[in-house]
Length: 100
Image (cartoon, rainbow, N blue to C red; front, side, top):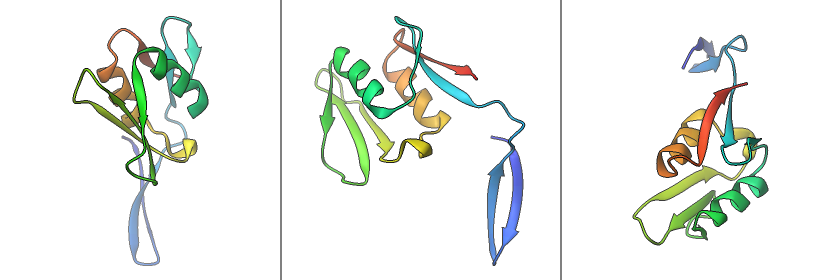
């Protein structure tokens, strides 16, 4: 992750560099860029994933045939590349992460 460390009001945080290319999650079979959770949920359901309602702060999916759990922030604007790569690893050959 690249960016600039900002110190403000006694708190240090990393602000991503806007010049860095953004990542997008792509469904490989349709070449569709996932732009919202509704589209993602449709694709995951077709791969055997089920919604898991254990934590109200997260959007979670579980696949019965595995021990895998995909946990995503409720707000799609907080959907980051680490979440994308988690989906890719747990769904080999179905998704990929690309530079925008």
